[in-house]
Length: 339
Image (cartoon, rainbow, N blue to C red):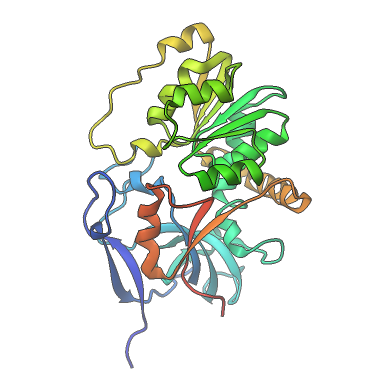
Protein backbone atom coordinates (compact mmCIF):
# COMPACT_ATOMS: atom_id res chain seq x y z
CA UNK A 1 0.00 0.00 0.00
CA UNK A 2 1.31 3.46 -0.92
CA UNK A 3 2.30 5.72 1.95
CA UNK A 4 -0.20 8.59 2.43
CA UNK A 5 1.14 11.88 1.12
CA UNK A 6 0.13 15.53 0.96
CA UNK A 7 1.19 18.75 -0.72
CA UNK A 8 2.81 21.82 0.74
CA UNK A 9 5.04 24.78 -0.07
CA UNK A 10 8.75 25.12 0.63
CA UNK A 11 11.09 28.08 0.17
CA UNK A 12 13.35 26.94 -2.63
CA UNK A 13 15.73 29.86 -2.20
CA UNK A 14 15.63 33.03 -0.16
CA UNK A 15 13.86 35.96 -1.86
CA UNK A 16 15.90 38.96 -2.91
CA UNK A 17 13.71 42.03 -2.74
CA UNK A 18 10.05 41.34 -3.42
CA UNK A 19 9.21 37.62 -3.23
CA UNK A 20 8.46 35.91 -6.54
CA UNK A 21 6.68 32.66 -7.30
CA UNK A 22 9.96 31.10 -8.41
CA UNK A 23 11.32 31.46 -4.87
CA UNK A 24 8.90 28.73 -3.75
CA UNK A 25 7.99 25.21 -4.79
CA UNK A 26 4.87 23.11 -4.25
CA UNK A 27 6.12 19.67 -3.23
CA UNK A 28 4.57 16.35 -2.27
CA UNK A 29 5.75 14.90 1.00
CA UNK A 30 4.78 11.88 3.13
CA UNK A 31 1.86 12.76 5.36
CA UNK A 32 3.24 13.27 8.88
CA UNK A 33 2.25 11.16 11.87
CA UNK A 34 1.71 12.68 15.31
CA UNK A 35 4.16 11.91 18.09
CA UNK A 36 3.31 11.68 21.78
CA UNK A 37 1.25 14.69 22.83
CA UNK A 38 0.70 15.75 19.22
CA UNK A 39 -2.23 15.88 16.84
CA UNK A 40 -2.45 15.43 13.08
CA UNK A 41 -4.48 18.27 11.60
CA UNK A 42 -6.13 18.53 8.22
CA UNK A 43 -5.56 22.16 7.29
CA UNK A 44 -8.76 23.96 6.30
CA UNK A 45 -7.41 27.53 6.14
CA UNK A 46 -3.93 28.92 6.49
CA UNK A 47 -2.88 32.51 6.88
CA UNK A 48 -0.39 34.56 4.92
CA UNK A 49 0.93 37.71 6.59
CA UNK A 50 3.47 40.42 5.74
CA UNK A 51 5.67 39.52 8.72
CA UNK A 52 6.46 36.22 7.00
CA UNK A 53 8.72 38.08 4.57
CA UNK A 54 11.15 38.95 7.38
CA UNK A 55 11.29 35.29 8.41
CA UNK A 56 12.46 34.32 4.91
CA UNK A 57 15.90 35.89 5.32
CA UNK A 58 18.83 34.23 7.06
CA UNK A 59 17.79 36.07 10.18
CA UNK A 60 14.70 38.01 11.25
CA UNK A 61 14.58 41.31 13.09
CA UNK A 62 12.64 39.78 15.99
CA UNK A 63 12.36 36.04 15.41
CA UNK A 64 14.32 33.13 13.99
CA UNK A 65 14.61 32.98 10.20
CA UNK A 66 12.92 30.05 8.43
CA UNK A 67 15.03 27.26 6.91
CA UNK A 68 14.97 26.47 3.22
CA UNK A 69 13.52 23.18 2.05
CA UNK A 70 11.06 22.72 4.92
CA UNK A 71 7.32 23.26 4.69
CA UNK A 72 6.58 26.90 5.43
CA UNK A 73 4.90 27.78 8.70
CA UNK A 74 1.60 29.58 9.08
CA UNK A 75 -1.16 30.13 11.54
CA UNK A 76 -4.03 27.94 10.49
CA UNK A 77 -7.43 26.51 11.26
CA UNK A 78 -7.94 22.81 10.83
CA UNK A 79 -9.68 19.63 11.87
CA UNK A 80 -7.96 17.00 14.01
CA UNK A 81 -7.86 13.67 12.18
CA UNK A 82 -5.56 11.81 14.59
CA UNK A 83 -4.68 12.61 18.19
CA UNK A 84 -2.12 11.45 20.69
CA UNK A 85 -3.04 14.16 23.18
CA UNK A 86 -5.47 13.34 26.01
CA UNK A 87 -7.44 16.59 25.68
CA UNK A 88 -7.70 16.73 21.86
CA UNK A 89 -10.22 14.60 20.05
CA UNK A 90 -10.63 13.55 16.43
CA UNK A 91 -13.05 15.96 14.80
CA UNK A 92 -12.10 18.97 16.94
CA UNK A 93 -11.75 22.26 15.08
CA UNK A 94 -8.58 24.02 16.21
CA UNK A 95 -6.37 27.03 15.54
CA UNK A 96 -2.63 26.80 15.90
CA UNK A 97 0.82 26.98 14.30
CA UNK A 98 0.34 24.90 11.15
CA UNK A 99 1.89 24.93 7.65
CA UNK A 100 1.36 26.05 4.06
CA UNK A 101 0.26 22.48 3.50
CA UNK A 102 -2.67 20.09 3.44
CA UNK A 103 -1.73 18.42 6.75
CA UNK A 104 0.40 19.34 9.75
CA UNK A 105 1.34 17.90 13.11
CA UNK A 106 1.24 20.16 16.13
CA UNK A 107 1.42 19.76 19.89
CA UNK A 108 -2.01 19.57 21.44
CA UNK A 109 -0.85 22.15 23.98
CA UNK A 110 -0.23 24.71 21.21
CA UNK A 111 -3.73 24.74 19.76
CA UNK A 112 -7.01 26.29 20.83
CA UNK A 113 -10.51 25.13 20.01
CA UNK A 114 -12.45 27.10 17.39
CA UNK A 115 -16.19 27.61 17.84
CA UNK A 116 -17.83 27.57 14.37
CA UNK A 117 -21.03 29.27 15.56
CA UNK A 118 -20.32 33.02 16.11
CA UNK A 119 -18.56 33.62 12.77
CA UNK A 120 -16.90 31.72 9.91
CA UNK A 121 -13.96 29.67 11.17
CA UNK A 122 -11.59 31.68 8.97
CA UNK A 123 -12.12 34.68 11.25
CA UNK A 124 -10.04 32.84 13.86
CA UNK A 125 -7.09 33.87 11.67
CA UNK A 126 -8.28 37.44 11.20
CA UNK A 127 -10.58 39.70 13.16
CA UNK A 128 -10.94 37.09 15.95
CA UNK A 129 -7.32 35.99 15.75
CA UNK A 130 -3.80 37.38 15.73
CA UNK A 131 -4.55 40.46 13.56
CA UNK A 132 -7.56 41.41 15.66
CA UNK A 133 -5.58 41.03 18.88
CA UNK A 134 -2.73 43.07 17.40
CA UNK A 135 -5.10 45.90 16.56
CA UNK A 136 -6.84 45.69 19.94
CA UNK A 137 -3.76 45.83 22.15
CA UNK A 138 -1.74 48.06 19.85
CA UNK A 139 -4.43 50.69 19.67
CA UNK A 140 -5.80 50.59 23.20
CA UNK A 141 -2.66 49.89 25.24
CA UNK A 142 0.21 51.22 23.13
CA UNK A 143 -1.38 54.15 21.27
CA UNK A 144 -3.98 54.95 23.97
CA UNK A 145 -6.33 57.19 21.94
CA UNK A 146 -8.44 59.73 23.77
CA UNK A 147 -11.84 61.07 22.76
CA UNK A 148 -11.53 64.02 20.40
CA UNK A 149 -8.03 63.15 19.20
CA UNK A 150 -7.05 62.58 15.57
CA UNK A 151 -5.81 59.07 14.84
CA UNK A 152 -3.99 58.13 11.65
CA UNK A 153 -3.72 54.47 10.56
CA UNK A 154 -1.50 53.44 7.65
CA UNK A 155 -2.53 50.28 5.82
CA UNK A 156 -6.02 50.98 7.13
CA UNK A 157 -7.76 48.46 4.88
CA UNK A 158 -5.54 45.55 5.89
CA UNK A 159 -6.17 42.82 8.42
CA UNK A 160 -4.77 44.80 11.38
CA UNK A 161 -5.34 48.34 10.19
CA UNK A 162 -9.02 47.88 9.44
CA UNK A 163 -9.70 46.73 13.00
CA UNK A 164 -7.41 49.34 14.58
CA UNK A 165 -9.15 52.15 12.70
CA UNK A 166 -12.59 51.02 13.85
CA UNK A 167 -11.47 50.67 17.46
CA UNK A 168 -10.22 54.25 17.39
CA UNK A 169 -13.54 55.36 15.94
CA UNK A 170 -15.41 53.55 18.73
CA UNK A 171 -13.42 55.66 21.18
CA UNK A 172 -14.74 58.91 19.72
CA UNK A 173 -11.67 59.87 17.74
CA UNK A 174 -11.38 61.48 14.34
CA UNK A 175 -9.86 58.68 12.26
CA UNK A 176 -8.02 58.96 8.98
CA UNK A 177 -6.31 56.19 7.08
CA UNK A 178 -4.33 55.39 3.97
CA UNK A 179 -5.03 52.59 1.51
CA UNK A 180 -3.90 51.68 -1.98
CA UNK A 181 -7.10 51.74 -4.03
CA UNK A 182 -10.34 53.67 -4.40
CA UNK A 183 -12.27 50.48 -3.57
CA UNK A 184 -10.49 50.21 -0.23
CA UNK A 185 -11.02 53.88 0.53
CA UNK A 186 -14.73 53.51 -0.22
CA UNK A 187 -14.94 50.52 2.16
CA UNK A 188 -13.14 52.49 4.87
CA UNK A 189 -15.59 55.36 4.58
CA UNK A 190 -18.85 53.52 3.99
CA UNK A 191 -18.38 50.33 6.03
CA UNK A 192 -15.61 50.96 8.56
CA UNK A 193 -16.98 54.47 9.09
CA UNK A 194 -13.71 56.40 9.34
CA UNK A 195 -13.66 60.13 8.69
CA UNK A 196 -11.21 60.34 5.80
CA UNK A 197 -9.45 57.77 3.61
CA UNK A 198 -6.49 58.69 1.39
CA UNK A 199 -5.47 56.68 -1.68
CA UNK A 200 -1.71 57.04 -1.34
CA UNK A 201 -1.17 55.75 -4.88
CA UNK A 202 -3.14 58.52 -6.56
CA UNK A 203 -2.75 61.45 -4.15
CA UNK A 204 -0.78 64.23 -5.87
CA UNK A 205 0.82 65.13 -2.55
CA UNK A 206 0.50 62.85 0.44
CA UNK A 207 1.45 65.71 2.74
CA UNK A 208 -1.28 67.96 1.34
CA UNK A 209 -3.81 65.14 1.61
CA UNK A 210 -2.88 64.64 5.26
CA UNK A 211 -3.16 68.38 5.94
CA UNK A 212 -6.66 68.41 4.45
CA UNK A 213 -7.77 65.31 6.37
CA UNK A 214 -6.13 66.34 9.67
CA UNK A 215 -6.02 70.17 9.74
CA UNK A 216 -5.34 70.14 13.50
CA UNK A 217 -2.49 67.66 13.23
CA UNK A 218 -2.23 64.02 14.30
CA UNK A 219 -2.28 62.82 17.90
CA UNK A 220 -1.92 59.07 17.35
CA UNK A 221 -0.21 57.24 14.49
CA UNK A 222 -0.76 53.49 14.17
CA UNK A 223 1.94 52.51 11.70
CA UNK A 224 1.61 49.33 9.64
CA UNK A 225 3.58 50.53 6.64
CA UNK A 226 6.61 52.74 7.29
CA UNK A 227 8.45 54.29 4.35
CA UNK A 228 7.17 57.39 2.59
CA UNK A 229 3.82 57.40 4.40
CA UNK A 230 5.50 57.52 7.78
CA UNK A 231 7.89 60.20 6.52
CA UNK A 232 4.84 62.32 5.62
CA UNK A 233 3.08 61.69 8.94
CA UNK A 234 5.92 62.50 11.35
CA UNK A 235 6.11 66.29 10.68
CA UNK A 236 2.36 66.48 11.30
CA UNK A 237 2.38 64.89 14.74
CA UNK A 238 1.14 67.01 17.61
CA UNK A 239 2.77 67.65 20.97
CA UNK A 240 2.49 64.60 23.24
CA UNK A 241 1.59 62.40 20.26
CA UNK A 242 2.02 58.63 20.32
CA UNK A 243 3.26 56.32 17.57
CA UNK A 244 2.54 52.58 17.73
CA UNK A 245 4.91 50.78 15.35
CA UNK A 246 3.11 47.61 14.32
CA UNK A 247 4.62 46.82 10.89
CA UNK A 248 6.84 48.18 8.13
CA UNK A 249 5.57 46.46 5.01
CA UNK A 250 6.98 49.16 2.73
CA UNK A 251 10.49 48.17 3.87
CA UNK A 252 10.26 44.37 4.08
CA UNK A 253 11.48 43.86 0.52
CA UNK A 254 14.19 46.53 0.58
CA UNK A 255 17.67 45.11 0.05
CA UNK A 256 20.14 46.75 2.41
CA UNK A 257 19.20 49.26 5.06
CA UNK A 258 17.38 52.49 4.11
CA UNK A 259 18.77 55.74 5.41
CA UNK A 260 17.22 56.79 8.68
CA UNK A 261 15.62 57.35 11.03
CA UNK A 262 15.42 60.82 9.52
CA UNK A 263 12.50 62.42 11.32
CA UNK A 264 13.32 61.91 14.99
CA UNK A 265 14.68 65.43 15.49
CA UNK A 266 11.12 66.72 15.38
CA UNK A 267 10.08 64.27 18.09
CA UNK A 268 12.06 66.21 20.69
CA UNK A 269 9.98 69.36 20.76
CA UNK A 270 6.76 67.43 20.31
CA UNK A 271 7.64 64.99 23.12
CA UNK A 272 6.38 62.16 20.93
CA UNK A 273 6.43 58.60 22.23
CA UNK A 274 7.37 56.00 19.59
CA UNK A 275 6.87 52.39 20.68
CA UNK A 276 7.17 49.15 18.79
CA UNK A 277 5.22 46.14 20.02
CA UNK A 278 4.50 42.49 19.32
CA UNK A 279 1.14 40.81 19.81
CA UNK A 280 2.93 38.13 21.81
CA UNK A 281 3.55 40.72 24.52
CA UNK A 282 -0.14 40.32 25.40
CA UNK A 283 -0.56 36.58 24.85
CA UNK A 284 -1.68 35.99 28.43
CA UNK A 285 -4.73 38.15 27.73
CA UNK A 286 -5.58 36.89 24.25
CA UNK A 287 -9.04 35.62 25.23
CA UNK A 288 -9.96 39.00 26.69
CA UNK A 289 -9.32 40.72 23.37
CA UNK A 290 -11.05 38.05 21.30
CA UNK A 291 -14.14 38.07 23.52
CA UNK A 292 -14.44 41.84 23.25
CA UNK A 293 -13.90 41.81 19.48
CA UNK A 294 -16.62 39.14 19.16
CA UNK A 295 -18.97 41.27 21.26
CA UNK A 296 -18.36 44.27 19.01
CA UNK A 297 -19.09 42.14 15.94
CA UNK A 298 -22.33 40.88 17.49
CA UNK A 299 -23.33 44.46 18.32
CA UNK A 300 -22.73 45.46 14.70
CA UNK A 301 -20.08 48.09 15.51
CA UNK A 302 -17.10 46.14 14.13
CA UNK A 303 -17.00 45.11 10.47
CA UNK A 304 -14.45 42.90 8.76
CA UNK A 305 -13.43 41.74 5.31
CA UNK A 306 -11.59 38.68 4.11
CA UNK A 307 -9.82 37.96 0.84
CA UNK A 308 -9.97 34.19 0.31
CA UNK A 309 -7.72 32.40 -2.16
CA UNK A 310 -8.95 28.93 -3.11
CA UNK A 311 -6.68 25.90 -2.93
CA UNK A 312 -3.18 25.15 -1.70
CA UNK A 313 -1.95 25.96 -5.21
CA UNK A 314 -2.73 29.63 -4.58
CA UNK A 315 -0.72 30.11 -1.38
CA UNK A 316 2.25 31.85 -2.98
CA UNK A 317 0.10 34.10 -5.15
CA UNK A 318 -1.83 35.12 -2.02
CA UNK A 319 1.40 35.88 -0.17
CA UNK A 320 3.04 37.84 -2.99
CA UNK A 321 -0.19 39.76 -3.51
CA UNK A 322 0.09 41.23 -0.01
CA UNK A 323 2.97 43.40 -1.21
CA UNK A 324 0.91 44.74 -4.11
CA UNK A 325 -2.01 45.53 -1.81
CA UNK A 326 -4.33 43.03 -3.49
CA UNK A 327 -6.09 42.04 -0.27
CA UNK A 328 -8.95 43.85 1.41
CA UNK A 329 -8.95 42.89 5.07
CA UNK A 330 -7.46 39.56 6.06
CA UNK A 331 -5.86 37.35 3.39
CA UNK A 332 -6.37 33.61 3.91
CA UNK A 333 -6.02 30.49 1.78
CA UNK A 334 -8.84 27.95 1.85
CA UNK A 335 -7.08 24.60 1.61
CA UNK A 336 -9.99 22.23 2.17
CA UNK A 337 -13.57 22.01 3.42
CA UNK A 338 -14.42 20.39 6.70
CA UNK A 339 -15.07 16.64 6.51
